Length: 426
Image (cartoon, rainbow, N blue to C red; front, top):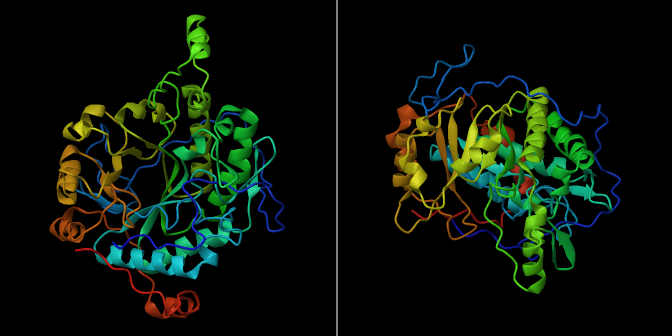
């Protein structure tokens, strides 16, 4: 597709707005969660499941056979982290306040549906740079008033196009070391996982209101609680480079361990599992959609075993070796999705990626990323061609696009004539 549209007020690579009062702030008045809750019984994804050790098909669902594959695409954002909610860079709000971005999103969804891609992965709060109000001590206080109108834009675009969404609530940047961008604090929210009080606030004041509001929306097929959940977990994520200098040498000699921003953000396996258990329980309690958590590679899967997921979700492995191993060797109890694979790769085409993922036993694969956000992003004619060639093996939902008459008037209101159609590279 064409390069991401540039805005005169586009956000930098990272950022989160400083706390400020908002009369439209959304607060949850429901009963607080206990520090740890027991996850509900997992549901069963109604598509392709032969990669699971036990592969039940829901008795009340469509009669899908064993050859059902979920073909998807990542449309993670129009502008990273500032599509949903107000921010220091877009205080007026995200998508709902920028009709040109909303129009682009609708065009992308419509094109994907026409290409045979019926499921899209979209990020909501990302690393917390927009949409979330924090107290002075870093406790999540509330959603700002732009969050729901912005999510409404995404869901209406998906409903009108006839695509379903995997909505990613948070990403690994939420836990990344704190830093400053354009004078504003960004990222650095690992304490909302480590601290039980802040963790409860994150669940109650931020995640619960979103899940309750969109509990039964037909466009939402699954909620991904956290993308890259293993990246900042001690012992699972990338190794923290040792610090240099006399002070660091002395600390190692005394056995005091590393003292660095990166190591300070790491959470323990137990802390992350406590958060994931509670968050998955919220998904199960308040919605009818499936619950999942994304990890960066197979070595992160032990983190999410036993937290009650309906589907497992893993990203493209750095070396690609994992794609040559059968998913069945993992002996998972639910299907495994390849939630992102590079659309632009020096030696592998999109067709090769999809063929390999399907043969390895993945329940689906999502190309990264349609709007070309980085060097690994790409999307071309191989996707619709592959969809046509494998039409009988793909999962098809009952959701259909809204009639043109229902969406014509809103489109005139939100899509100015000056916005050109997106150009796809074939």
